[in-house]
Image (cartoon, rainbow, N blue to C red; front, side, top):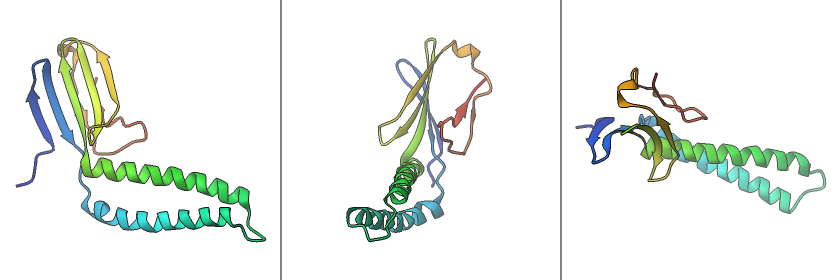
Length: 137
């Protein structure tokens, strides 16, 4: 039986909602293989920077390596989020908190308001650069 994506917990300080990230199994399987080839390409560029050939453009390779590293970090984060991520929404006395949790680490945002003021709580299945996957009015 599959695990439900949404779980509600009553804690001493209030209510917690645990919302698991949507699992995209094809991507979870394909991404590590792609990442291995992507990493190999980056290692080869680093090797060319250390031992450049006569016509090696060091400026271009350095710029390419910068974007390669950004893509590498983003893909690793995305894969970890898809495999192990969850959002923890906490509603307690005067505070509404949203934490994006990946293996115990993550950013927490807090909003001061009353629980009766929360309406239109919605969960989106897309991952954005800002991480705004849960929204409310």
